[in-house]
Image (cartoon, rainbow, N blue to C red; front, side, top):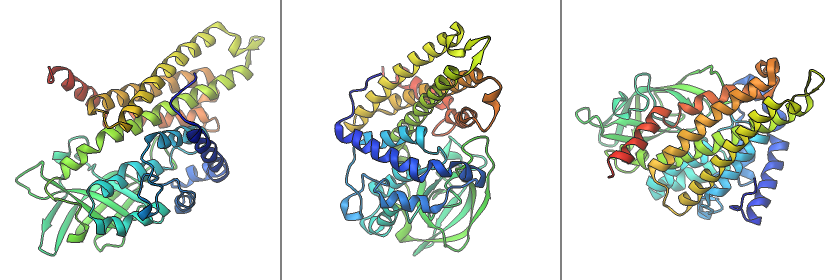
Length: 381
C-alpha cells in the first residue's frame, strides 16, 4: 500500500537507519537472544549516530526534532531489520520525556546529554508484584527526611532493569492518600538499590526484564522529579504516547510476519505446487493484507494527530487495542501457514509469535483499553 505521510527527508532517514540495523544489530541478534540482554555498547553506537532522543534540544546533544514520524520509521525498521528486544524506543520516547517535561533544568543538564549519547540507559519502575495497571495499589513508599527521601519497596517486570543507569521510580509519598505518588530518579550506584533476577520470558528474549529492590535508599531532593505529590498526573500524561508507540510496534511486527510468510509460502511446495498457489493460503493472506493495510491508515492518522497535539487517550487506546489484537491474529495465522517450521526457533515467525503475546498485556492490557474506550463513549455524552 502506498503511504503519503512521509517526505523525502523521512525516506532518507529510513534508508540510513535500515543500513545501521543491518550492520550493527541484525548480525548479533541471535547472540543477544541467547544472552538474554543486549550489550550496552549498542546504545552508545546508536547515540553516536544520533538515533537516541532525537527530540532533545541541541543544548543537550539532540537534534531537536519532535516529529513522531521519525520514531515511527525506526519502529518499522526495527521489526524488519533489527531486534525487538533492543528497547531503545522505550529509552528515548517513553522514559526520557519525563525528564524533558517534568525535570528541572539542573536534572536535564545532568542526565539528558548522557542519555542522548547512550551512556545513561533509562528504565521506569511502576509495576509491583501486587500492583500492575492499578498504580494506586503500589506499596513502594518514599518518606521525606528533609534533605533526602528514604525509599523502600520493590518493583518487578522492569524493562531495561539489568542495564539501566537511571530508573524513574514511582512511590507513595503519603500512606493516607493512595493516589498520591512521587517520581524519584534512582541512580544505579545508590546504596540500598539492588537488582534481582533477569526474568526468563516467553518472548522478547534479548530484552532484559528485572526485579528491583529498594532498601532505605537515600534519594536526594535534587533527584525528585517535580512535585512529589503529582506523580500520578505525570504518569497519566505519558500514556497516550506510550500506547501509540506500542501500536506502531504491534503493527510493524504484524507486517513483518506477513512479509516473511508470503516469502515462505511462495517457496514452499506441497502436493505438487507452491503453497501460494493453494486457494486457502491465498485467501488467508488476502484477508490479513486487508486488515494490516486498514490498520496502517488508522495508525498513520494517529501519528499525524499526535504530531498536532490532538491525539486523545481514548483514540490512543483504540489504536493500541486494535493493533495488539491484530498482531496476535496475524502471527498466529502465519505460524499456521509455516506448518511445523513455524514452531521452530530457527524460523523468525516463531519468535514473532512469542513476542506478540505480551503486546496485549503491557502498556495497558486489552481489558484496560476497552474500559478507557467505554468511558469515552458513555461518560462524554
